[in-house]
Length: 226
Image 1 (cartoon, rainbow, N blue to C red):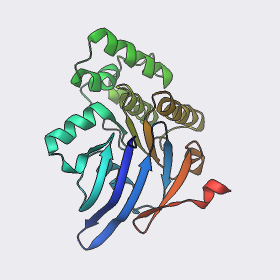
Image 2 (image 1 turned 90 degrees about the horizontal axis):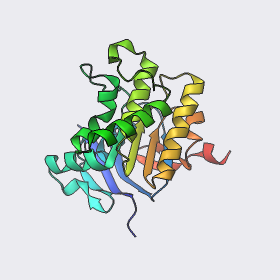
Image 3 (image 1 turned 180 degrees about the vertical axis):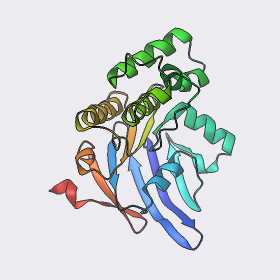
Image 4 (image 1 turned 30 degrees about the vertical axis):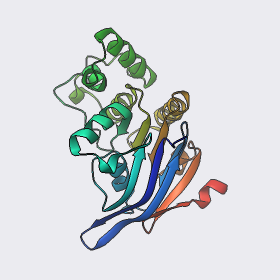
């Protein structure tokens, strides 16, 4: 059976500077890993490559057995829309849409019926503590609330692969714990695979295992065994 996510020999350079070198990673359905590392180590670059937002210089990335490095840009967009949920560090919330419209946008793009869209959207907004803010404009929300909107949007279409880039950086400790539990629980319940990029060892501890990105490769982190 194919892994949910398989990365083999991944390499990415910016100019003469190597960021990722011969990086390998495999995740099974329901497996959730945290990736830690110094700023500039390439963590966000790795997520962008896995999501098909960037292209590697060499190597293979397969989601559900489909090699995304062989797809053109349109095909990568379709795969990402259907199978990937991405929590961006910078939110990427659309300012002209309400909170509800932002969260249900992935379902609109997938052609999900209106009643089902609204039901799923309200379930996720309630889960992140924003059940009463659906008609609010993004400008009316705090940074922490916007982050929670981004988490709900990433999960609403039940993706096979969840990618989260510092999803708790703007949240208070209690809300951060709620979001972390939601991410971990959703990945398990939906038999998805998940990658959490974080500087927080508290957040990393919610994953099944912790990997450190150093010198372009992933290694088991000593934190995981302490």
